[in-house]
Length: 273
Image 1: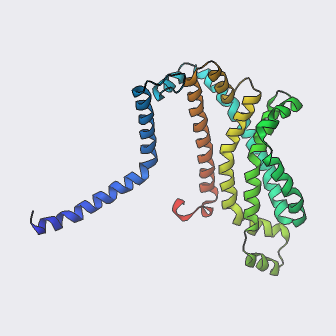
Image 2: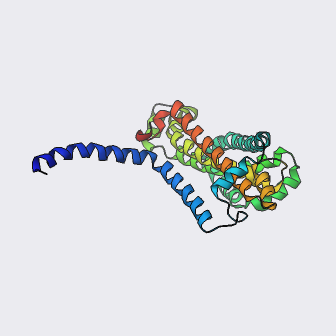
Image 3: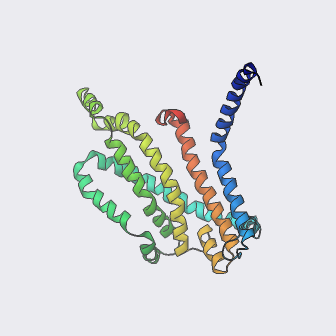
């Protein structure tokens, strides 16, 4: 090929290569997920893995249709209800508590070690005690979900409230702004990126808390369904319930991102706005 033709072809290839890289970057997670599922399916078929040990994705999908939609909806609603109630309780308690910790050094030195102790206690170990103490209603499951969820919200919100540059605090005090105005107009807006990050982390922990609570004492819920299915070696149904749990966690996580993008877009990093 003459040098002139090669030089003319290069500018055409460059945009195509750049476009391919952009598409690959955009769809890389989906491609990786499909590749993983294909590898899983191929490995199970090639090595003839018993279904009661590790069912293939096709068997897991078939297991999802072994139960009626009404059964799935009942278990899904039971888990989502407990997760949402525990998550809401964690927000209602954690944010005011973080404001109190950030506003008082005495409270911080007094309460923060207690919060760390509560978080360091294995929830799985005390979950049966909570169930015995509070009964077999939704209350113990909500409490267990709350205990797993509230810690990252408290710690991250407190960090955000305390991360305000000292110059802004001195400026507000020089303008005779009170403590309430300081928190509402300076500290809370500055801490919003921290708060939304904590809320995103807490969404997944809320689902984990609901499932842990259902493992201990429940008659409905996806955690109860997984435990029931695996006890009868219906592993494909357990995997189907697990996939639903992952989907619920992703929906919760993305919902917080949408709320942040709609109501506080300025708190997002520039590439995500």
